[in-house]
Image 1 (cartoon, rainbow, N blue to C red):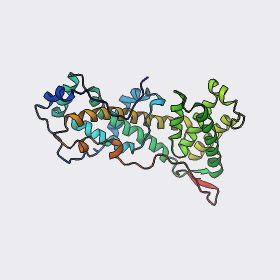
Image 2: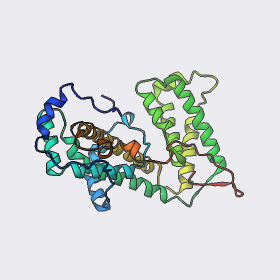
Image 3: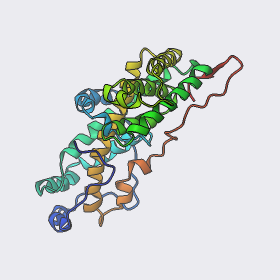
Image 4: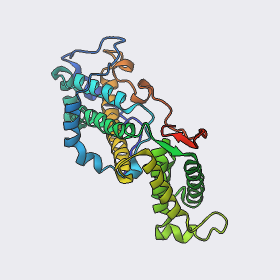
Length: 306
C-alpha cells in the first residue's frame, strides 16, 4: 500500500502548455496579498459531514497517519475557506479543465469542503472528551511508573523492530503522542505489541531489558490513568484520538493536491502564497510533543492536563 507523503504532487514538464486554455476565461482571482481567512464552521453541518465521511475516515491505516503539528480545527477552517472559494463556478471551471486533461483529480476539490467539516468535528469530539476530565487528578506515582515503563518497553521494541516496515511506523505513532491520555494509550499499544508472537519470540531473548510481567502492568497503569481522568473507557478515548488523526490525514492529502494545482495555474494571476497557504505553516499550533512531567503536589497528586 502506498504511503501518504507530505510532499506536493509533482507536475509534468508540459503542464503549463496543457492548462493554458483553462485560464482563457479569467475567473475571479484572489487579490494580490489576499490571505485566506478561516470561515465560521457550523457545528451541525460539521457533525453531518462527519457522518457522511466516517466510513472513509475509518479506513485510513494506522501506519499511514500523518503527525499532527497544527491546530486541527483552525487548519480545517482554512481548508474549508479554500474549498468554498474554489468551488465557485468560475474557479471550479479551471480545475474541471485540468481534470479533463487528466492533470488533476477533481475529487480532491469535491471532497475538501466536507472533509474539512468532518475533521473539525472529529477534533471537537476529541477535545470534548478531554475537557470532561479537566478537573481530575492523576497520582504522581502512577504517572512516574507509567513513564518509566513506557520508556523501557518502547526502547526494547525500537531496538529490535524500529526499522521494521510494519512495526516501525506503529512505534512512531506511539512516540508522537502527548499528555496523560496518550501515555495511557501508548501503554496499551506497546502491551499488545509485546504479546504478538513473532515479536515476543525476539524480545523475550533480551535478558537485560525484557520483563515478562511488563504487558500486564502496562495495562493496569493505563486503566489507572483513564480512571483517574474520569474517562468512560480506554477504547473510546483511543478511538476519538485516532479518528481525529485519520480525518486530518485525509484532509491534508486532499488539500495538498488542490494546493499544488492551484498554486501553479493561478501563479501569474494572484498571490498564491496567500491564496494557497501551507496548513502547517499558516496555522500555528502549540507544541505537539511534550512528555508529561508532573511536579508532586502537597496531596501527592498532579493535575490531569500536563
